[in-house]
Length: 389
Image 1 (cartoon, rainbow, N blue to C red):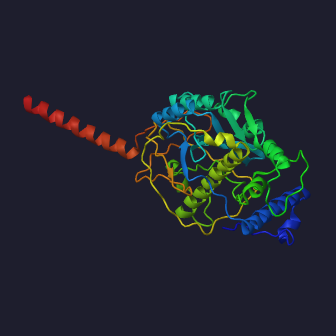
Image 2: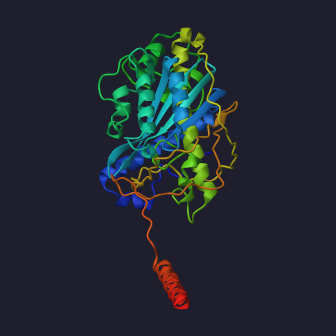
Image 3: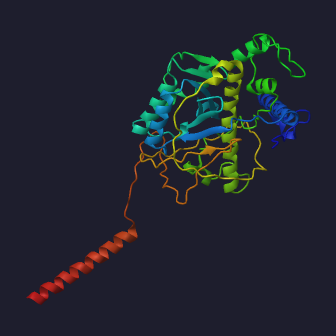
């Protein structure tokens, strides 16, 4: 699906009302969009692994699910990690962490941690998720990213989930791909690109050169704090709908964003196995958490463009009691499986940085009814006394 609605050779009238910095940003974004659409037309789409399970972690996750992931993490030693942030008031806020547990070249679990919907930091669930992350980031484990590891997490330390400090055994695949590209004599791409030895490759360009596939970057700049999992019920309020609220548009946009987040992570994994083919024989034995999943199919044909505009901060409710998580399963070409619920949980709207409290007050009508009932009772008691005397 094309997302191009701009032309760098023919800017719209409002472009000339922008200041120089805004014009520069507009042109940069437009050229990136044009490149994305050119690659879309020239190459087949990137395909994620067929046997992939996607799980969301947030304040609705069950303790049992996180404990199962902890057991898996103790048996897994290679991970691919990516992050997504959202700009709010000109400051980038960490929003999503993607962690792929690599069991084998054909099978893995990908966890999406929705940072804006974490449980309270003093809860058992939060500490279990923190324990999971600590195991994943253990020095002995291989942690692969596309870019410096510290850059991926600089916007996430304020959540209290990750520890600051030097991370050992972290692989920046940009550097390793450059080395592979410069040394490889087997590149069969029709036009081998000329690059300086120290030039960093974008993930999209690396996938194009290595596999002759198109990695769609249309969803890069986005409202990543929106709440992707349908279970969070954030799709029930207007955020992505073009005009009036439209439930399908809200769901479709979140599905596109999840597919983007999954592809961005699995693309790094695919490059890793190409550069390190000896690791393609790894095999980790354990079972995927077994909980219910529901398949949802939506038509995606008319969604909004990329926008580099800053988005207002979304206030996130927090909950202490966690219902059981539904774990989506991905079949073949990974389709995102989203849970559906007939009866949504009650949403308590919190004040920022404050504990949530549910206050139940008696209405004026209820008070009047209670007073009437009391008066009737007093009258009946008086009548009873009169009969006795």
